[in-house]
Length: 429
Image (cartoon, rainbow, N blue to C red):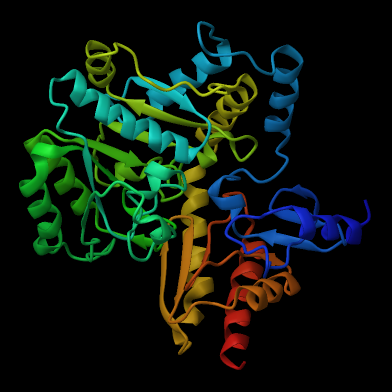
């Protein structure tokens, strides 16, 4: 297909995420990608600031990961996981048990991050059925969170500012504590936990789980909160007998500066969800890593099994490339890479603090956020970034980046300069 034919068919027949069919945003046709660069079909190259929604931490077309995928495809591309197992799944499970917080011993593979969150929520519900407490079937979370786009996940996303308020009358009604106000790096303020603590005290008899994104709230607001908040949540869950689900789909595998964001607070959740960067962006795969006691309790109750089984669970291609991606990360000096990335983002985005249109600039690990006072004009701002040779995909009032860890200093400077320049131009419109 020619470039124009491709875009014409796409416009007529393909529905892209978070877009309108009647007023579609422009899309850009990709020819190939390597390292931190996306090559468009029209010949332009873009420095990728999004790591394809947090996932491509090693850069595109990494030779080791590509070779792993090719070798695995020649042996076994897929087999059902019901009654069968295979080495890539076993090796990946071993790796996840080894690197996640101590005490998480059971691995359940899922198709995507949203499905992993669904799985964790179902595990929490079944756990208390097995414990003889079926009335404990509701969840507590914090405002400004995001946990995915499937139906049950939407019920624990922010009910006001999240993406899913349209479905409010359909979704289960759960409890929302005020979002943490004490930011990462601030002095801890005890009153920050009061809303959460009060809801836990009032409703613990009906709560099976607390679900939150540790330290970094992603698509619900891109906020970074104090590790002490997470420690207090863990203490309250233990005190009241409620499971803690840590959604590390976005933060897992080093993005926040720690291998897992829970490590900032030295907290071990009861259930840990991972995805996105798990395969280095090659294939969709996620996992829930749980305490063994949870599996035993689920198995003790009716019907004696966990009620979930995706068709493509533990796909050998995805598991094999995930094994290589995790090992590639562990063998690298990823801490230095992320620290250097953090410094470059802080320095490069600092000029945005002077813009009257900007509410706040914040950086943690490999995440840089420029929060605007008003929602951005997506069509205009996207075209502006592409014109300057970078790929940045804002949403709402947030212009944010999380580049691949391997980005070079000069490319990072080009990326942050482009953000500053486009936002400066926006003030003059």
